[in-house]
Image (tube, rainbow, N blue to C red):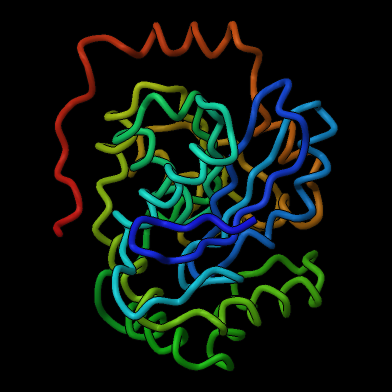
Length: 274
């Protein structure tokens, strides 16, 4: 379906399942769209839950505006989709850049989020130097983008899946990609995790170069689940494993976690500059 934001931008969002056992909002990685979760959706809905996917502005079938492409707007769009397509609180699973959006959403709108599942959060992105320039150049050149994605992919990943990912990324505007990249570089990951009141679980791939287990421990203060290959392996080729990890727990567990983490409120942290 189409969801229209307050600035008139049209967002593509989809919902599957009844939601009887809760809803999982799936937020995609940097430059990607909700289509990357399609293999995971049936596994989630088989548990009598519901799954909601979103094409962030600038990606997939959502509009590509010339302005307003920043982290704060992506968080607001995610909150809008929860209000329109789900009954909060929901479990939010964010992959890559989507993990940063999920953390901000849980911090700014805690009433919408019961549990966070963060897959391959990019905690070690380069702020400057050759690595940063390579990322920026890849956004504007689909051939370089293909090389970048393929270089970090597990050998078990289908080349057809990689091709689909790169084709979707290549349709994204460079402005959106650079704004998201800069937001990830600046993100205070440990501070964001400490600021949310809900349960937080992190998973990463053994071969992830921006989100390895050691980096997650050091930068987020969380012990991650480690899957074979890279983070998106489970989404593409082991969806049952990913679904078991991120599907909603029972309502009693949601209430218990909320009570446990409420305390005196979240510690302060510096939000994204306007």
